[in-house]
Length: 125
Image (cartoon, rainbow, N blue to C red; front, side, top):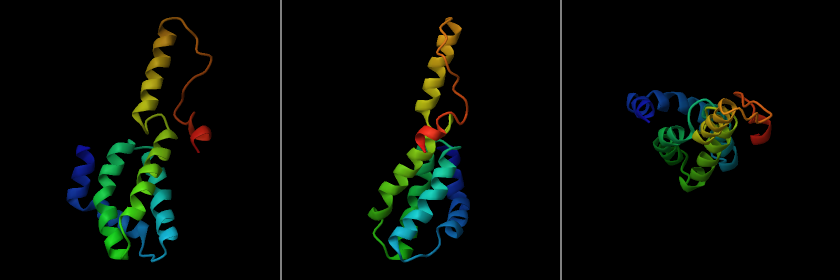
């Protein structure tokens, strides 16, 4: 969260996101332009700070588009969650699962599978 806030304060996120999100007046296209990059980013940065970092940016973007911000909040959250579930480090739940599997292995119990970085991607996607 500290890194997300620092990037937001420096204006880095605003500059990068402005070019990616564009200025479409079509809400469906705008939601798509928001969701696709967010799924990709949240696979490698935890989903909670990703949403926290994007909230003010999306609010300003919706105002520039003349659209209610409420049209973008659920897609923002769900896209971050989807991206987070695709990789081992994307969400804390996957890290907890990895810890439980490691504990079972240390205790001599073979879970029958390994949890690798992209193991969840086919299931989540």
